[in-house]
Image (tube, rainbow, N blue to C red; front, side, top):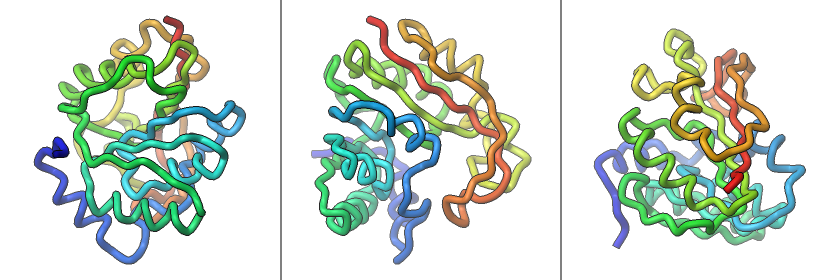
Length: 206
């Protein structure tokens, strides 16, 4: 039985169209940072319709996803089949998921925004499942994105302040990249235009 909380219906509705809510191609930041790495076991948290995990699987990664959406799981299976790869997809919830310690060589996510009290408690739990030497790569919307129309949640509680995020997840990691950047998004109609983002790449030290 999967651990699903309120909110799954909204994501199921978003992913129910014939198209792809956030496109079929991987997030550009994740692609840039993952491409040089040696393939291993990877968790793509909240990967929705599976675009990042499927792309990684085509590069040799053993790709896994957990996400709230059963419809996203179906769309991911379709995308994986079109690319002749397999992705392990569990319908599950960050707040209740059981993470095994030191399981993954990579944890990656794009736009995985949760309420701040959930972030502070459960992002560190998730990162405990990285192996020593494993990579955490993520892109999220900065707090200054609130007034912009290129995507992202319209709640400061869900947006990221870099210093606050790093204070929660940075201990025990080497920082390869940790910046607020302005970029031009072109993922889909939901993510298009100039955006202010937080980009992070960490390596687990111990």
